[in-house]
Image (cartoon, rainbow, N blue to C red):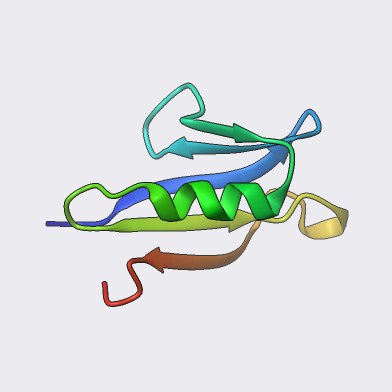
Length: 73
């Protein structure tokens, strides 16, 4: 099984996690810390790949890091 990918970015003052290919956010929070906790709770078969995008400066919108959960994946 492959990892389910979620793109995480700050939009309109909120952090949103959108599954790859989806048009609506699966998770919406007001802080990055809360978003990280919520993403860890997702447990699809095969694991989760959380792709974090920069929200400021010249790198806005670009991928800044990718994390996998559980870590063993």
